[in-house]
Amino acid sequence: MNSKNVTLLILVITVLIALAAFIFMRIHTQESVYQAAENYALSGHADAESRAFTHWDSNNPAVIPATCAACHSTSGFVQYLGEDGSRLRAVFEAVPVGEVITCSACHNISAHNLEQVLFRSGYRHQPVGSEGACLICHQALESGGGVQLSRLSFEEDTVSADIGFINPHYSYAASSQLGVAAGSGYEYPARGYAGYFSHAYGAETCSDCHNPHSLEVDPLLCAACHSKVVSQEDFQAIHLQKLDFDGDGDNQEGIRAEIEGLQGHLLGAMRDYASAVGG
Image (cartoon, rainbow, N blue to C red):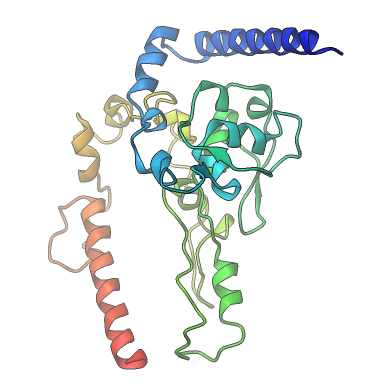
């Protein structure tokens, strides 16, 4: 096949993908194509100035490493999906900086037909509907198994310069939602851990709650059960169980505040441990 025919074939495929995306959006959302485009332009996926897309600008050469490109560029994500004909779940080359996550990252045949999403723990999750593309990047980059392996050669409470911070990275909502099933967090022996958080009927997948283009959550969706939610700010006040989890004497504060209180206790315990055991 000569280069002219190849170019024509690529053009035809591009038009077909765009048409499929157009039909998909018309059927599966209440947005017009123009509304979807406007919403996307204001989203984090389109923010070319954000750290997620500018972290590598000062590299020489200015490229996004292959290990990061799958989630920080459209080219890398499409390659990870195997949409370009390459092997699934692998990015083989760095990507020049300057890309964001565009429509074609999620609106392609491979993304629509995802049957499994692989987590770092080895767990394979069967996505529901269109959530597969979200789960690929919004998961922890480490697992509880990685923590366990890092300490196999050490006795407990051993101070060692050979052990570094095992970083789960950022925005790992998929790992949080799947809980113990994903194996992303470290689990202490003889302790019980929560599994998949199904939330509520109609609010179970990423795009059930988040507009897939703006990424925002519509407060009206939550108001059916959380009657006090009328704006984005009210999400922080949600708290169904009026229990004082963090022990600060306030059982009316939202679950976000309770978690932040617990984080404060945890940080204090870590500092005490570091002082007493690590010196």
